[in-house]
Length: 408
Picture 1 (cartoon, rainbow, N blue to C red):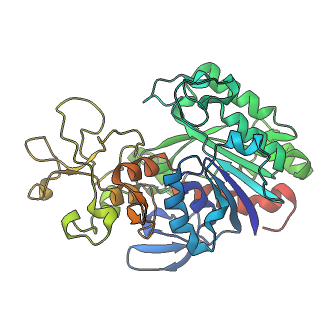
Picture 2: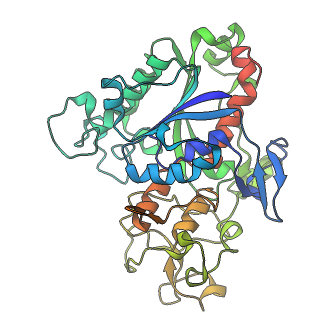
Picture 3: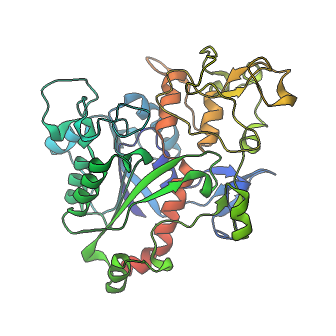
């Protein structure tokens, strides 16, 4: 197994993707590209993805609620809750916390709130500390916008063969901040950084329009001579490209140009078999935001299209998560469903759109510990879609021997 150290882990979207062995809807996998992804067929509509050769041995996030969801699911992989640390990565490094040995991969979606177009876009000048507290005596390096530097420090300490970092697309348009982050990653001791790339989740079988920028770095001394040359080339040969190929199309004209692409997975495909909240046994399907409809252009006041992909599932929605269906009065378009109650997306519906499996629990109460619907929405919205992370993990796994001369 290849050891994975996970930072800014949240509820585990990236971690689940890197480990695999979870069910997805069959349309999510384009077997023309990935005939070896499926372990078995579970039902008419579900398939089980194969386990990868990656295994998470260290996870970290300051959100204690994220740990509840993470450990609740990953215990089935035999991962003890003790491997998930809930102190800030700044404190982990400053206090010399023990880090695992022989790390193959470091992953991390460093905090995005300061780069998102939905936020104040303070970038590297965040007004919050590394613990998410407004103000306080901070050094600039310890504010929330600079936590990618602590990921860089971790990488330099444990020396993985690969690291994968993720953030919102809005970072790319934040000029100086983006250039600084790329430059800082490139200055990582002993690492070769390939050109960052924006990946659209819907083009990888996720039923959601979600664009995120990814950074991938390789330990130079571990690379074969051929791989080092290929990864530094202006046009990397396709077989060495660490980013997975697109497998699905969103717009019809793309299918005309590329007949190997599958149609994007729709909301209807992944949601229509779910019972209505009042009829559901799954607590995550029973819970949904009761925020009232606002007749304006603010976020969340639209109905998802059952014949298309969902808008981005957001973290900071303040209750205004998109509607599963709107009434005729509010210009709902799902004609066949107008007899049903107008309501927003449930927690489970958001999780399915993000490609989390149904046995990933987001609503529960265990003694003094609990996860509310509001907290669950945030965890889900912050996550990397597991299926997108799986595509990245399987691409690295497939090319492992090309990069490092090791067996897959």
